[in-house]
Length: 420
Length: 93
Image (cartoon, rainbow over all chains, first blue to last red; front, side):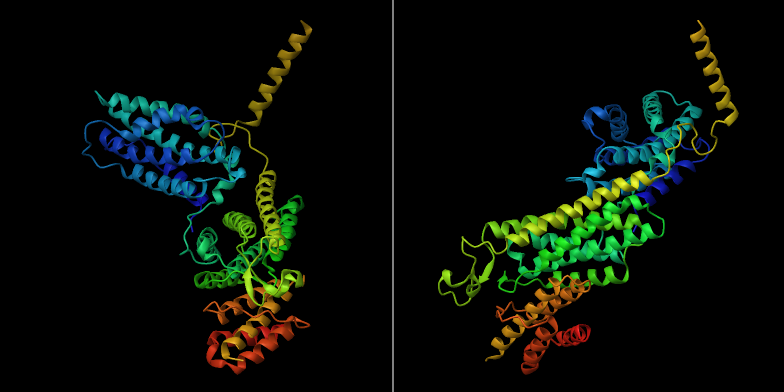
């Protein structure tokens, strides 16, 4: 299934192949095309948390994209330009993925720099498109209200230029791993999404929670951690990841131990109920983890990203079950001091048999969260050295000779200063 | 014992085997324990209260005890469970 990286590559391709300024289509086609493109750009940029107050940080961008999104007061009769519609469609897919993954409470590693890098990727494509539209309109020299559109496009070109100046190699973000989330995707991704949706339903609805579900979810989280750890170790072994990424692997090892312990319910403790759908999805997930493990670090990171909300919900549900004494215990296991209890009874207030299970689930959640954050940080460290700034970044770097001349001029001026 | 009581005791043995496998710190204990957990769900679609029985010396013995009891009540056992019992018995042996 398409990742943000795939969609961004498509956006880039569309923006760089717009061709010469378009004189054939009138202003209205440009305006009609910019309305959805501006709307989806705003949606994508607003879902990124770059730090600070969004209304202040992105004030300039909002002030330009807002009017472009609204369009003119009078109705437009022309069809939007095809190029702009394609760009709006791709931008819409990017914003859909971002809203779904970052909408509620984004992971700490997705806030700040990584969001800024993705914003740069998005806005550099917008910059190229705005330049193209502006060039086309300037050749036509349209009168009247058209001036305001040209003005807005000129502002957009100016405000997005700093983003376009960032070389593509410096814009690579871990947010590009995020992908459209659907259980119809073949392979592990689809199985994982189906399992996650059902597990969240079971954990968040009091009457669906059973001891079997709690065991199966904890055991599956242990298997997910184990598979991810294997993938990381394999990547270190093959040289795709440096040995410095070992802490992520170690955190996953702790996660396996903790979640396995959380799945080990003693036979005298239970919580009844039926969990038919989860059983089928759990088997499906286990089969895919075994036969189709993640092949890339991006896939591994995505697997952990999907598993984290389940780990959090499991730890919270287990804590609730123990605190509210919702678990059932087999009477004789309480010992003779409890009196004569021949069969299953709700756990008495003075007994805390499930406490160790709740504690290990919390440890498991912490370890999994740590592994995910460490893996993101390690990837950032292992990226290639940042490229120097320059425009255009990829095609014509300043020549070495020019660099040397500039350096020697500077050193001469420093010498002059010291002599004086 | 009624068939329901027999099934409850068999479930008790399967639960013991799951507990022993998940808690034994062996590398394959996790996957085998999850298979055993799946067997428990297959055997207990109606949410019958399982019996709590004394743990056997090993998960293999617990499972073989469960298998022996299930053979006495085949009409109460889901057909899919037989292949899981056979596969687990073979792996644990």
